[in-house]
Amino acid sequence: MTGLPNVVGNTAGPQTVDQWFNVAAFQTVPSGTFGNEVRNELTGPGFQNMDLTLQRQIRLNGRNAITLRWTS
Image (cartoon, rainbow, N blue to C red; front, side, top):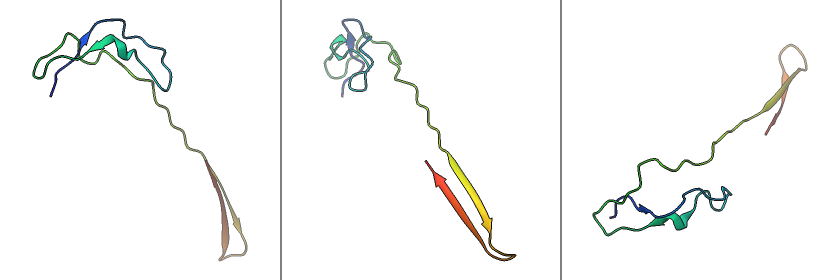
């Protein structure tokens, strides 16, 4: 198992889905040693999630009802 890698270049990358940081900026180190990269140097994109549900309940009589639901 290896420790942290050596940083040999600029870590900023194109920030696309395929490559968020510059992978060529890192160099592997021998097993059991630590490189010069500081912990938590890289941060990924933010994550946001939103759910939406619309619901309508239609009463047929005093005892029965139909519920229409749309979820995205």
